[in-house]
Image 1 (cartoon, rainbow, N blue to C red):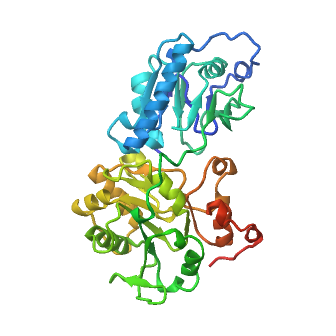
Image 2 (image 1 turned 60 degrees about the vertical axis):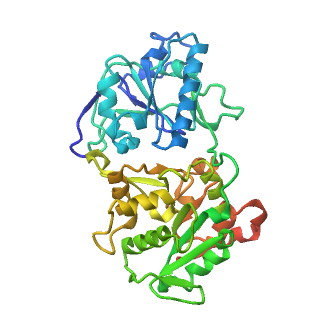
Amino acid sequence: MPGYTVIYFCCFLLPFVPTCIAFNDGNSEKQERSDSHVFDHLTEVRDVIFVIRSQKNSYHTHRAEQRRTELLHEAQILNQSSPDVVLLHKLSDYDGNWSVLPALPRLVSRYCQTSSWIVFLEEETNVNLNNLLQVLSKFTTRKIAMYIWEEGRGPALTAVNEFCSEPQSSFSTGDCATTVNTYSSACGKPVQKEDIFVAVKTCQRFHGDRVPLVKQTWEKDAASLEYYSDITDPYIPTIHLGVPNTERGHCAKTFAILRRFASGAVTQAPWLLIVDDDTLISLPRLRRLLSCYDPKEAVSVGERYGYGLLRDGYSYITGGGGIVFSRVAVQNILAGGCGCRSSDAPDDMVLGMCLTTLGIPVTHSPLFHQARPHDYVKELLARQNPISFHKHWNINPVAIYQHWLAEPRQKRPHLLTKTREEL
């Protein structure tokens, strides 16, 4: 972002799973030495700061602590001192640290006087510490003055093949410094169907095309579901909440849904799912995912975005992929006085501002998707059992659902060859 402070590093390594990006300080001859060459400097564990991109939720905190324990154990096996392992959610009170750039100044000031490398890890990243140290030993560690954004100018980026996208169980990962776990989406027995109340936002314009697709695909897996529209249509049926349809944001409609859910008049379910009428979702997979979370906590889960995070902004869950709230979270939102500045304000962003103000964490799950399958790299989706996708244009929504989201017994292969124009 223009105007961002220049940051000085010993060296900066950024291994976002599944790949690693290393900043090249210009000494390409030394950096391209073969592994068989005797290293001028062998990197040790004390030269590395590990930063686990943890989240402020009991489930994710536990997973990050497990990853920390594994790193400490690997160092012990190598007879090395215990490394510094930072859980990102504990670095400061600012929730936007997950986007990395806001966290860099604090990390630099704390650690770069005594360490040479900062390594960012996801919860799913496995580290072969011996291989990692050998890889880092191939790079010089003199300071780099970096403009992270200046119209693309700055230090060259070097792809490091030893940071692997293959799962840990693959036969080809012997030389890998890092591998990845297939994302786990279950922690025990799935929550009951009746534990999730589903709210579908629609409008009269889409009653004839989008709503039938919901009914044809995933509606059957919902025990309790209501369609909220700008008119009452008994044939669907839809419910009119007294909120007119808006062309852009749907803040007033969403807050009306929250109030209806919180009243307990319709359901006592501990979980609320809010989706658009062009969201495709697997409710069985969502039930498995929610087994990892405690409904007694104020939980919000979905695909996390950020707004203005370099300027003390806020995180939010993008609505297209679906937003899941615990009942406790909904109650806290309404009790906290949150509301819409206008009926057509962007509901997901308003909720993000509210959650930030109230100190309720916005929890990211990579299994929710704001876009269509082909809008994501195939390596990412290969490690997932996705929960949702969004948008119908230039695809066959039924075929997408059958291929990506339907349980095995529901799949119908002959649908996968069809195409569909925008609805």
